[in-house]
Each structure stands twice: as C-alpha cells, then as structure tokens.
Image (cartoon, rainbow, N blue to C red):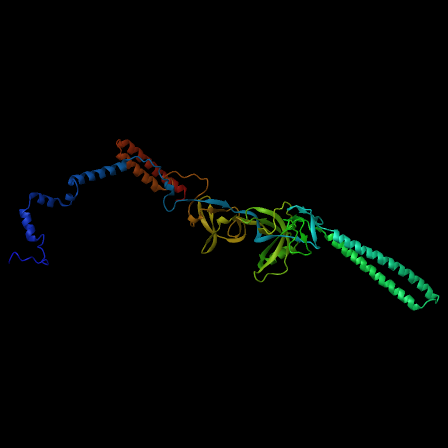
Amino acid sequence: MDQRTPKNPFDSPPPAWSPQRGQDQRTQGAPGEAIRARRGFTRFIPGGMKTVVVGLAALVVAAVVYEIRPNTTPARNPFFNGANAPVPVGVAKATLGDVDINLNELGTVTPLATVSVRPQVGGYLVKVNFTEGQVVHAGDTLAQIDPRPYQATLDQVQGQLARDQAQLTDAQLDLKRYQTLVAQNSIASQQLDTQAALVGQLQGTIKSDQANIESATVNLNYTDIKSPVTGRAGLRQVDLGNLLTAGQTTPVVVVTQMQPMSVVFTVPEDNIGQILARVRAGAKLKADAYDRAQVTKIATGSLSTIDNEVDPTTGTIKLRAMFDNSKDELFPDQFVNIRLLVDTLHNQIVVPTAAIERGASGTFVYAVDTQTHRVSMHPVKLGQTDGDHVAIASGLNAGDTVVVDGADRLRDGARILLPGEGLPPPGAANPQGGDQAGRRGGRRGAGRGNGQNNGRGNGQGGAQQQQGAPKAQAANGG
C-alpha cells in the first residue's frame, strides 16, 4: 500500500493488551513490575504491609485498655433493669366523704332594673344634680328643666278655678231663693229648673278646672327629672343648656340597679325535674358565680326563679339566681359561670379522678397491695363527679390504695415502687445483676497492672452481690 494514502479514520486501533502481548510483557518486563503483582492489595496502601501491622496492633492495644480501664461512671441499679422492674407511681386512698351534685352553666349578669331617664316635658335643661358613676336613690332629682312656663300655666288654671267657684256659689244661692219662691207659688217652676241646671254646669266647670290644675302641677313636677330606682348613674348623655323634648330618644342618663344583682342562666330540660323536686321540698339551692376560667369564685347567692317554659330551639330553660352584690362583685352584662348545687350525697367512697382508667371492658382502677408492692385491676362503677374527685358506686372499699400517677406504665400484677421508698441496693432484686457485676469486676481486676489484688477485690465484691441476690429475691416474692 502506498504510504501516502491516508489512514481510514473508522479503523479500530489495536488492543492495548492481549494474552500474547501480556505474556510478552511478563517475560520481557522489568523485575519491579513482577514484585508489584505479587503484593496484592497492599500495594494500594501507603507504607504497605508495615502500615497494616501497626494499625492492627493499635486496635488490639485499644481493646485491652478499654477492658482494664477503671469504671468512673456510677453503676446502674439492676433493680430497674428488665421487663419485671418496679414502676414508681403515685398513690391515694379511697375515703368516705360527701359528693356535691353541681350543674355548671354559663350565665349573664342581668340587673333587676335598668332605666333610661328621659324628660317627660319639654324645655331647656338648666340644672344637673348628679355626677357620673354616682349612686343615686329613688326620688333623687337628677336634673331640672326650666319650670317657669309650667308654673305660669298652673297659676292660670288656678285663677280659672277661683272664678268658677265664685260663680257656682252665686248660682247655688239663687237656687235656694227660687226653691222658696216656688214653694210660695211666687215664680214658675221652670225658672227653678233653669237655675238648678246652671248650678250643675258650674259644678262641672269646677271639676274641669281642678283637673287642669292637677295636670299643670304634674307638668311642673316633671321639670324635676328624678331617678325612679336606686342604682348607679352612668355617663351623662345631655349637656347643660340643651333643649329637651318630651319622650326624646336620647336619655339624660341611664341608672342601673346594682344591689341586689341577678344572673340569668340556662340548664338542659333533662335537669328540670331534679331541680323542681328540690325546690318543692323547700330547699334553697346554692349558686356560685365563677370567672371565665372557673378558677376564682366571684360571689355566692341562691336560686330565685325558674322560667315557665322551655325554649324549643335549644331545649333549655332559663333560671335566675340572686346575689347580694354588696361589694359590686358582679357587673351588668358580665359573662360568668354558674355552679348550681342541686344536691349532696353523703358517705360516698371517693377517689381522685386521676385514678380512673378506661379500657375495652369499661372503667377500672389499679388497686395497690402494700405488702407485695403489686397492683391489680379492679373494675369499678362510677357515681357522681365533684371537681377532682369521683364517687365509686361499686368495685372499691374505703381505705383501699389506688394508683393516681404512672398508671400508663402498669399492667395487672405489675410491681411498683411507692412514694418515699428508697431504691434497693444494686443486685438486691436481680441475681443476674450481681453475677454480671462480679464477672466484670474479675475481668477488670485481672487486666490491671497490679492485677491480682484489684482483680481479687472486684471478684469478691461480685461474689458478695451474687450471694445477696437470692435473699433479696426471696424477700420480694421471686
């Protein structure tokens, strides 16, 4: 082939290695390449086999030091190792006591009287006799309208009355004369009848004048705007000098009765029978008002009134409780929580509500055997609940000890640790713990520099623990 012919770019290059070529290289290569082939994986490690040997020796030394090092961490109590370890719990005793049956409902503070004081006659406001927030009494004059026009009207009707009374007196005298003359047949009887009619007319005029006087007197009294109830005056709505009209929309002031104070609340219709039975028996049901969080008691009162119908939309009925409110504890339109004491059950077996557990079979408690320090599940039937305590209808006796804290880690027959009890010594309740401690002590003692003494000491400690373990196991019931 002509060397000037260019090579085909699609021709494959010869393989870099072939069996024949590799054989040629092994037979013809340098001695260093054969040595590297015999070293295997160590040829990839810096330092070769020497580095591997030093590393393995370091690992062996570290393992020996770990085994013979002194134990600086406190030993765990083997009493709490294993599935049968006792569980620390809180306990309480079932006692005999009273249980209150309460109804907790939301109520609104409602005053017995809230009066918007408005003028009943028109005129200019000339005087204000109260201060905002003042406690006023029924009949006190709060403000005054200009009385002069109404005084003039009263004087006018009083004058008309005096004039008509004089005319009536004259007519009555004439009537007497006519009666005498008629008896003597001196005048016609018709004239007597006319005079009698005139007297009756004047008497009617007198009554009309008296009514006008009473009306004018009332209007004159209305110029003094008075408080109709005893209570606290609110903010003044009208300023001095304003022209007032009878029955205007804006009141002069609003007076709210503060003492006594009532709270209106609702209870479900299912509780009406129980409440009515107590009321008919003459009981005075106690009602306590609490704040929004039901923590602080605001006031104490009693049930006053039960409404006469059930609200069909909510299935509830309204009740009113009365409170003395001598210190203004309750404020109008305030939301409070009412706790109505319906009845009290005596000599009930009472336990904390925290002791009640619920499962597939119903409610139960963990009863504690103080001798064996074990618990057992006791199914119970619950009665009434009073705050943090609940009555037990059946399933428990007074004086029994129940678990109130830590029950989530218990099961029937589990061992417990009662409050105030000290922890058992290591290995006392678990024989395996003492055996393991002795073996560890022997190994650590054998590995120390002065191995015999320390190893013997730790070995003896482990043996003593191993001997003590069966005794503790027998004392704890296995």
